[in-house]
Length: 408
Image (cartoon, rainbow, N blue to C red; front, side, top):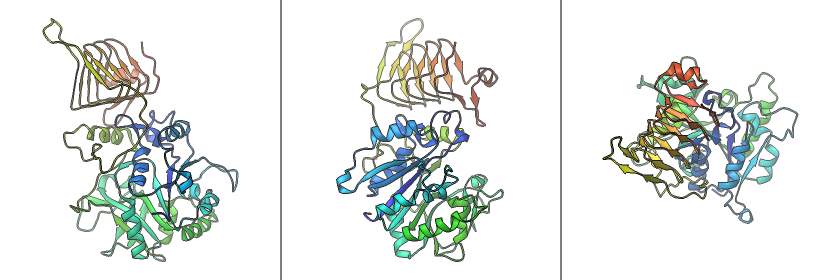
């Protein structure tokens, strides 16, 4: 993989994830008790043998840049290994990035100087594990001009993705970005074949396509809307089905682009046997871990008139957190959280620095950083009351409290 450069697109607004993205880019949103969403893509690169990466940022990138500086500066520049963050530089004109393809086009100079033969385009806002070396190898052996990684998704979700049709040899016959009425996979009426937003190009060929697209006035300068569809029928565009290499079954992949999808992906982790195994030492997911003490569970006054027992069941609890006589169930508790006496938290995601007061009750909620829930307050039990407090309620009924909210 020494001749491959990975470009991680990490500049999207993530407006459907608001309020979690009001103060941070979507790839910087915390996930799974201490990780950030982008950690999964970057870890895939490291585990695949890719050690040259450019992260293209744009929207509210300060926390993302800080996270990469803290947790991802271990590669050796002297060995030509690096993870470099590239904000928009307006080298070609005065515009910010107009689309995913334009983001790469505006950085052609930097990419050219690196001199990699192949370029791997990745999205920094998906949750999955994938060996990119197998994808690149398939692309080279097939002699493809472009290769698109794909995965079946339920037909009703197809309008959120680029939908493909392929022949038995995995050649792409059509590509339609976010169609209003997606077509199913032949013989499988419940699913359609979706692009994962993962592409491989020979670098010189990629430059040709980007420069050609840059001259098209009405182009959205986007890989899914423009670059890939323009190649169908004239170039060899190959599909790479993302499947478990041992079982042949569909692998775990989640686009956490909505509040409900984000919530469900986190809740996946607390299952007894989760599909996404964070404990797999053969495929480690790296991140920055702050110097915090171990989590602690205190009080076992079960015989008192008002029992006070610090417990957490079917949950993940991060470093520095203290469950002080409260009860946690089916929840993701990030580092440095405190659950005080007689409090009850269930089916919820608490970000770093959250404090749950005594006798407070939280159910089916996402609470962003540094929020204090006052004693006795109930969150997630009365949607109308939560709305009146200014909280966001997702379509699936998840209550979301923004970063730093002050509650009485």
